[in-house]
Image 1 (cartoon, rainbow, N blue to C red):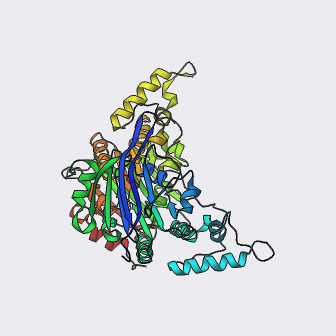
Image 2 (image 1 turned 180 degrees about the vertical axis):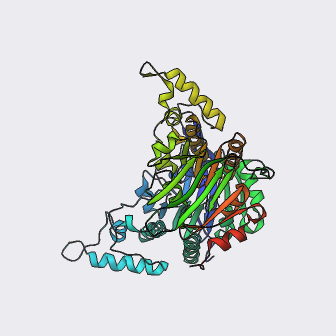
Image 3 (image 1 turned 45 degrees about the vertical axis):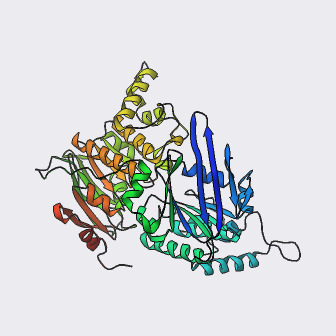
Length: 502
């Protein structure tokens, strides 16, 4: 680090919302030119703290000091003026404007005639991305850029505003390993230039790769601080959850004769001329779909259940051919999907737990043409309890829940619809280690009850730790199906990279 002078200090920051003490006396110190990890379970207070730092919320108590000077932020523009740039998980880019227009939105450069100087803005943006070592099509609308490129545009936008402190909230959640490595290189370069960074991530291995110091929040309070070189994953997890998590993955059942086939796909071809695939799923098993990002795992699952079109396919449910032209037909045959983007595709977050669980299930509570509210409430409460949703009650808005509890609400909905086959697409993305262990335990409990699960995941440890069999994808094709001792990271990657790494 070039300079260890303090860039930011938070002293005794507290914040309450109606009925909830979100933060209690938080202290945090960030040095100039360091990457500081901020860890904690979902609901620990990280987002609230960053919103206070960004002027989106105002603290009830406490002080914010920037380079020793106390500051008060009435809004995000005040935080920007103080040199703070926050890159949230949900980007603040306008999708149909290009990178240049997004970077200079509201502060366009003008020529000597007072007109917008597009050429100057484009030159400035190009210089900015050249400094970051990033190639961006400056003429393409943001919606046509990859997630990684959008991430770099957000970073460029913050740096163009002369940000001296960057907050990166789960920046690698949707990046490939190569894209994440590139981001880390950019972070190291920024650190060398004296830019301070707060790095929020649920991937603890990333902390040891790119961070200097660590602060942990638990239940809205400081749970500990550490130098990266003086701690380890187990110690961080214990700080985060208040207990040791000895085994994240529940034990797999002993090898036994497979149950009946609940889903058979003897052939499916998504596009004319594309690969033809086949797989089956047995009662009470977890079948993993593994492979590199873009290998066709999700596309195949969506094609099977009719969410995406398939050129041709044959599907048997309990040995009987069925027609699955859309998700409604899949649901009628007991097949449910937990989508990768639960907030966009799986939930209506402004509505209650009860509403989201009852969605698609109201017909079960209909009497004389009307919904029996008491029956609906009893069912939603029982399903919520069954999957372990932690909330004040079923009338709690889903938007206020942690990521793990939101995922449980989606699972409860499909259980209410008596789904026997569940497709989990990236089921633990964006949730903390404690909630991951709960989701894993719930999945294994569902299989003990006779449910069958297809688990699509980019995380090799959970594929290895959770799956009874694994279908490995490469280039849109299932290139191997592994079981037993063959389910290991080495064999999975060997098949997934068939044809050579890019």
